[in-house]
Image 1 (cartoon, rainbow, N blue to C red):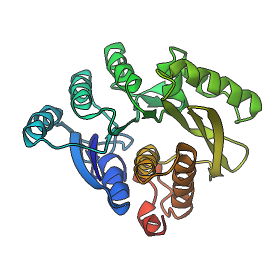
Image 2 (cartoon, one colour):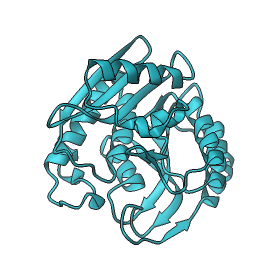
Image 3 (cartoon, helix red, strand yellow):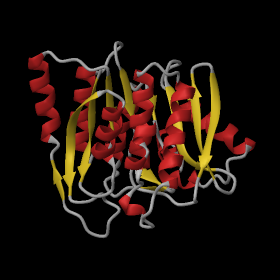
Length: 273
């Protein structure tokens, strides 16, 4: 199997293409990276340099169409600008379709705040991309943005029954088609818990894992990649999310660094998954 992974490449942070390539390759899936940017370190570090490689998205589309290649899955992540988002949308339209799986991680913000590259025009492109996806993996801030609600509402409280119902209602507003699945990631649960909420054709499910209460770079990328890999390997959506949730929980448990910017030590556990 073969996946096109459209994401940035950050030298430090264990995220984006580093996570995509590591996870999917370990699952027996060929990864064809499409770099949207190259960074010395992910953007959470105090200082970093970013080189925009958005033109590569168009070149990959053009050259791969000449080659006649196809993909079993397409995965999209971070895009630095509106212009790159335009190119990614063209790429996805060219290579995604009924015979493969498109997973979109709508990277726009977290913790109730938008990232610095966010703008209304950029948001419009991301929303178009999310609308044609088979699965989207927003955190709560991104889900609220996609639903046209105030992202500051991301602090809905601990994941109890009332909150779950409200988040499900918001997710159903975002779903563009009956067949689309939405996995809302990283919702705080009771003490020591982190929740992922799955809204899929025919049902909903809350899946929990242990948490130390900290957030880490790259966990969203790891989750999306492992989710796609499990789907391509024949797992149903709930099982795929459960396994991806377990992966994140185990990786957090094995992480030695106390600096969230360096990500989680997923290298220690990939063989066991």
